[in-house]
Amino acid sequence: MSLSVRVIPCLDVDAGRVVKGINFKELRDAGDPVELARTYDAEGADELTFLDISASHEGRATTLEIVSATAEQVFIPLTVGGGIRSVDDVDRMLRAGADKIAVNTAAIHRPELVAEIADRFGNQVLVLSVDARRVPAGAEHRTDSGFEVTTHGGRKSAGLDAIAWAVRAAELGAGEILLNAMDADGTTAGFDLELIRAVRREVTIPVIASGGAGAVEHFPPAVEAGADAVLAATVFHFGTLRIADVKRSLSDAGYPVR
Amino acid sequence: MVVLDYGSGNLRSAVRAVERAGATVTLTSDLDLAMEADGLLVPGVGAYAACMKGLRAIRGERVISRRLAGGRPVLGICVGMQILFERGIEHGVETEGCGEWPGVVERLQAPIVPHMGWNTVDVPEGSRLFAGIEDERFYFVHSYGVRDWTLVTNDRTPASLQPRVVWAEHGGDRFVAAAENGPLSATQFHPEKSGDAGAVLLKNWVSSLV
Image (cartoon, rainbow over all chains, first blue to last red; front, side, top):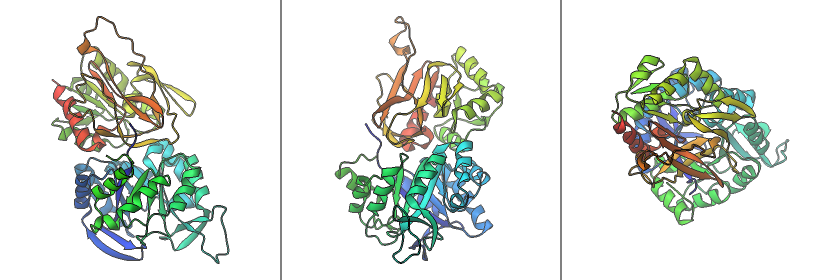
């Protein structure tokens, strides 16, 4: 008996439509989120993640409707992230039917937000999303771990050590770390195993590995490196990989799957 | 049936999931409705102390106890299961629970906490709740649990009425995943988030309601 490795498709949602860009720079349309959520559920997804990338209020309101519609039809856990800035934002998403909330930039600007959300709703609702990369060669700053936190889709350094930030967020009450490897994202060359190992060594909350998946054989090494769950977007949306194939690959490597 | 609304978490999923299981559902904090319903579902997420506070604010603990005294079914889910026990200890703070079952809710002793994801469960023979889904995985998300089941039952109690305790294990720690004890049933995991297996469990419960 043990926990299975969770395989999580991520849907980037902009004003009600699913999009996913290569390195977040170019966006491509991949369909209706509710329809995709139903499909992924049927294919054996263990959870779903919606990342709201809408820039406008109207866009965000649409996301709330999509969260409701999905929660009405899909009976697996649903995480929603993107634009969450306050306890009230979290409350609205949970009421709409989300089970977990991912926070990213707002927590960097105001770390107390992590504690506020955890105190009100419990650690289990709070996923800290970290966009991490190696400090670029030639940068004026450095970090102890060599990894740093970025904002703006990986374009700006937040001036924080990524590993230290994950540790601090866990102490403040995050229930899980969604680790987005910006160096690997969009490359389809495999997960950033070094980054996963570095975070796993320091935190005792679950770690979701994200960024870089391009083939089924990329998944078992991420789990070997310490990931409790694996997340991918593009490869699932465009049918490059099927969830069942990823699970078979994990199972063949000796990891339990649902 | 009634899903008890005492200000705790994502109730919409719970309501939709039991509707899908064939029940006519009212989401309410009205105690008369909660008392009269064929079945009462007590959800719960977040901190033990906050849940107990919310439950007491609507006198929900009295409805649970009165229903059980009359043999009327109650199903607790997640923290809604935990608050059925005597007390919970979170961050060193002890909170009195409903005391329907003896036992303490305490922090899981595992390398990675919360226990989050799909786990298998160890189902004893004769379980009605798990009929047909004994080998399935269910979705857990919790940092605290009941690690000792201490309810003493009379030897003369017929086998069919003996409590059924379902266990799960995470990182070497063992805890109660579910329990069935006469009219009182509870799951530590979230059947409403456990896909088809969870749907069967809820259907098993709903179809046992008169």
